[in-house]
Image (cartoon, rainbow, N blue to C red; front, side):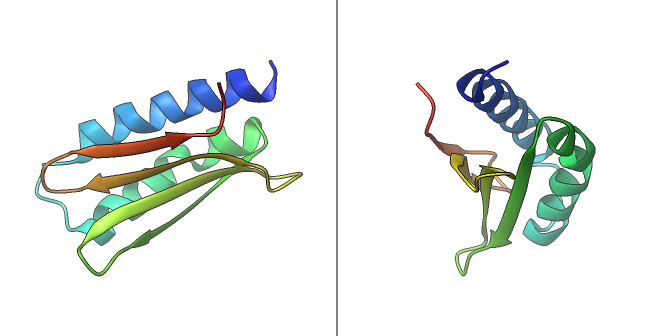
Length: 92
């Protein structure tokens, strides 16, 4: 599987999981930790790494990069209360 395919597949899964977890009464930090832990093993298998933080406006920001090159794959801003997503993909 090439980088674009991996990026699209994993980014789509992260979006699905964000929608599933958001709106469930979790704090932004609990949401961030839950999603990061849930995806950790799968990401390593595909050679990806996920970083995340909670912004001042309490949105959770995720960045997905390829581990070997640090090449940007995607980023996602998630409102953990409403579940609204804003996604930026590097792949085509």
